Length: 198
Length: 101
Image 1 (cartoon, rainbow over the protein chains, first blue to last red):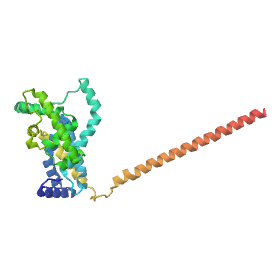
Image 2: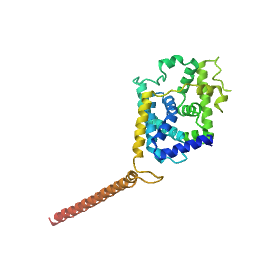
Image 3: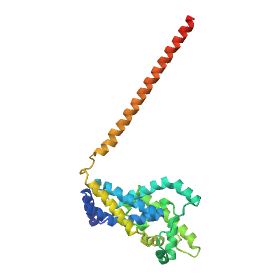
């Protein structure tokens, strides 16, 4: 179910129409609207800034290539996140053995700290623990948390991006939330109540 | 389950957003926009209309591959058949010569 407001839907339809006509201004508007969200998703999903930037560029190049042939009712946000996720999954499949082996041999560092030293100093202990717990989630759980909770994709968008039925999305999110709670409880010790399942 | 009534999800939602470095974001914007402009300068598209590049990849290339494979198999079959006939002829020739002696 598309829960976007009628105004938002109309504005999206108009944007898609302008993209189909090849208007550069429409492309720039789409870029401004969705760049930050896509990058935020990719950088937390990959835990590597350089890889996230590479995938961000690839996503936008794909969008540029296909923007004129989008269907009129296309949800641009869902389209972009679907492409970004597919690129990420295909990169994971391709790199799995190479990266894992390099990490085993100590030739490659583990997931990097995504914040600058200044941001690290500002981040609270809770933020650091939540970030670390998200980083330790399995890929499928991490992506549903990032898309549903941080990027706040609508249920229909989530289902489209993950290629699942809405009910399956809800179940995956519930499982991911339970894993997150467990990880936070382990990290926080017995006195921490954040990890308790309500 | 909604974010606002769940303490854990609320904390996740409150995490700061990481953004790409401005120089990187600008570089990607320029590259993608150039690609978009390049695509826009091509022939106007309509839904479902096949472009020449699509025709080439979808029909001409597969046809060439199939034709090459058929030609190769035909040639192989003809060569093997010729070799078989030649070896039998040679065999008969040898037997005839032995019997004459």
